[in-house]
Image 1 (spheres, one colour):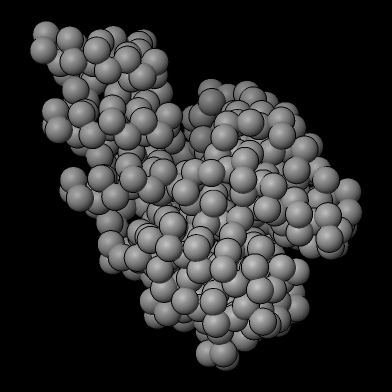
Image 2 (image 1 turned 30 degrees about the vertical axis):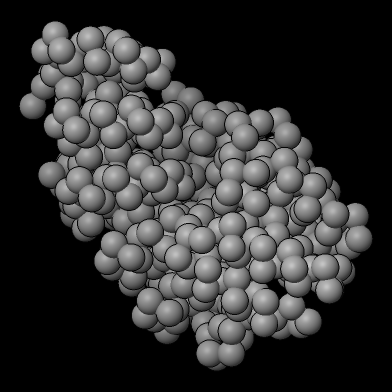
Length: 410
């Protein structure tokens, strides 16, 4: 293994997206899998920037798609968690370990299902990633999509893809509840229709939507868009058709058009809260974080007691490295739902990223109290204890967890 150094030139070049420097350094014999202090290789740096040409060149030079950084992410896992579909496909074709998991015990199928990355979900399923593999929170991809989704159009399609791939709606989480029971408790009628085998498409545009989905599954997005646009000309007020128009424009990278299409639905129906989520993701894709956060906030203002948009706003804030703001959102969620151990867990991770280790331990202890048999929380508590120099306490916590964190590093 290459010992990490402060900032190897190859990684610095990858961070800048400097292909010419990459070529020169490789020609000079730079070690392609040298790591920086965060354990990143140049390929990881390229993946984090979603730089496909650079990733392709580094893989061709021999970089390992399974090499992990200090957070236990590999380029393969990173691409899947962030919806970087072309790099994910490249990593899978280049020897990705389909059974490898992140520090939460999840394959790429789980975060992509949680975040509503439908195309990524399809890539994972096509690659044969196990559909019912549960993470250390006790959640499968289907449980994540039901519990952390909103039961709307996008999450309905994610859930439909998982069910068609054989996901078990009766698989139970650590609280003993199944996806079916969660969907019933949350009133997710669209999801319950899918579980009954009825499909979610309904209304005047249902036939066109089914046809468009067939093209979409083959990644023929131009064809899918043409189908729904033709149907919209006949049924201009249909919100389902308008959603799919926006979604296909998003997948084609035509994000400004997607936003206009989705905003038109909101103008006609201000209570279509889920459309704020879609608009936020289009802004995210354009690397416009303030506009994305404003879209989340606009939806939250309309539905201040709901957790869906707040949770995904906090996800995005963590992605941006804005952990102070993420902690504030988690506090809002915990005030409404103090028993949610996953919220306490995420809060603890953000606090640790801020160096507030005592507070991180307090947050993780809430998760431990809610789910005392889960080793994941004790492992993360031990990480904070170690960062405080309290090694003996960390070892005692790990002994109680029954498994050291390093077990996932292989």
